[in-house]
Length: 87
Image 1 (spheres, rainbow, N blue to C red):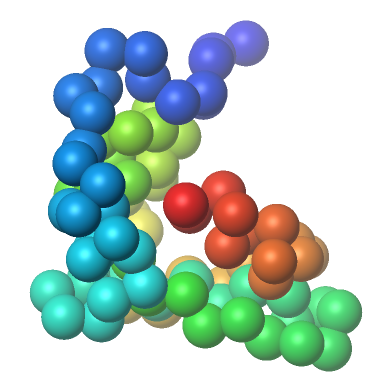
Image 2 (tube, rainbow, N blue to C red):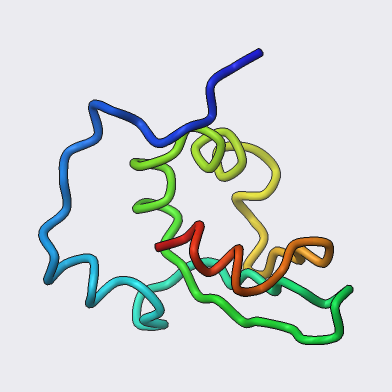
């Protein structure tokens, strides 16, 4: 089974860069909608380049057909949990 964990060799981002990029819709190229099944939708903007750099699963996800999608529904995952994953 492939390892989709955080990449150990990914360069560290500066705290300022991460703080500015996380949740900032300027330049974001994907919006995740999480938690719809629980009745509370979380709208989480993200930058695919940052996600792909830090996590192999996101690299696979955004290198294929999802690359063209501006909105990705994640209905069966708690919004708070998905927010923590993106941090």
